[in-house]
Length: 197
Image (tube, rainbow, N blue to C red):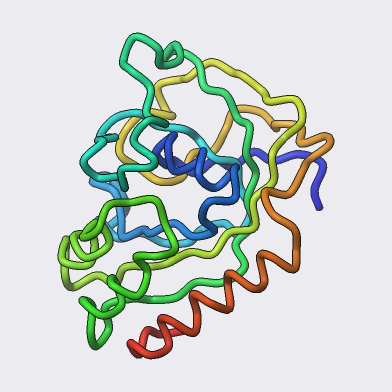
């Protein structure tokens, strides 16, 4: 485990909360509006999560998780960002290769997003595959806050930070055995849809 990290990955704050609480172990990614060639690439297998609040919508979450959204006036100062969750990629599964509807449906029990969320992601830019990224997540004991600089803005997934963020003492979101069991359950569910593992 490294002592520090200088790479961040943008994701909804509510999804980061779900990962930190161990409610889910995957994220879905196809690409942001400003990605090179509009196509997402897994450039790093270890990173910090950069929380975002734009485009979060209660209608896109299952009812049990809608209360996790913060009102606009309660959201953090946009001139700063706080890093509290570190992640390591363990597996990547490409969805929507032969039966995107089946792959999306297979994921429904394993995330906080509303029914249909994954399928909408499959159909957006249909020539590009949707990736289910499996993550082993760890909470940082002492979260680090730093200024948001202009190069951090925009609809891109990856951010190179100006300085290292010390990880210090970290705590796994779920224990190793639980993670392996959940990952296995997701892989079994997706294997039946002929997703590319």
